[in-house]
Length: 215
Image 1 (tube, rainbow, N blue to C red):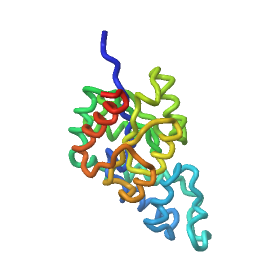
Image 2 (image 1 turned 90 degrees about the horizontal axis):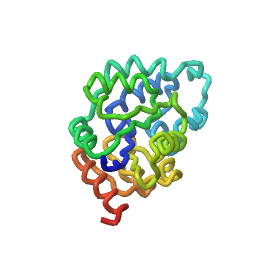
Image 3 (image 1 turned 45 degrees about the vertical axis):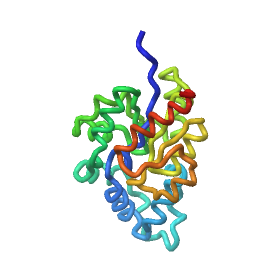
Image 4 (image 1 turned 90 degrees about the vertical axis):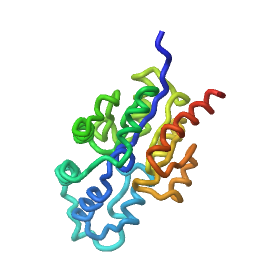
C-alpha cells in the first residue's frame, strides 16, 4: 500500500514566478495613480475583493473598462520567469508531497508557464482565478477532491491575504520574502515559518508536517 502523502499548496506569482513587475505595470496602465504601496495592499486580503476606488485621487483618468487579464497575459508570457532555484525545490518536493497551484491568476497561462519551464508534471492540479475567485473555496475543493483535510495541507505563499484565507480553512502557511510582501507584512499572518530563499522551503514543509504529526 502506498503511503499517504501530505499536500503542499503553492501560490504562483511571487513564489514560483517572478511576475511582480509585469503585474504592477499592467495595473499602472489601468490606473496610473496606483503606487507600489497601494498595489501591494490589495493582496493583504483577497485581491478580487479589492476596490480600485480606494486609490486616492480622481478616477476619471483610469481605464476601468480595461480587462486586466487581457492586458496581463501577453506581457506575462513574454517577460515572466521562474525564481532562481525554485524549479529544483518543486522537483524535490514532488517526491514526497502532492503539489497543487492555488492562484489568483487564471489557470491557462499558469499551465503554459509550467510546461514551458518543464514543471507541469510535478503538479497534480492548477487552480486559477477561473476555478474560483476565493482561495478558501479552492482549498475546500482540494479537501473534497483529494479526500484530505486541513491537517494534511500547507500553503506556501508570498502574501498576507493568502495566509488569512488559508487560516480560515485551518491550513498553516509558510511565507516567502521574494514576492509581493515583506517579512514585516507576512508576520501579521502568523505563518509557521518565513523563508528567505527557495532552498529553505523543503525544510520548512518537512518541519511543519513533522510537528503536526508529533514526530
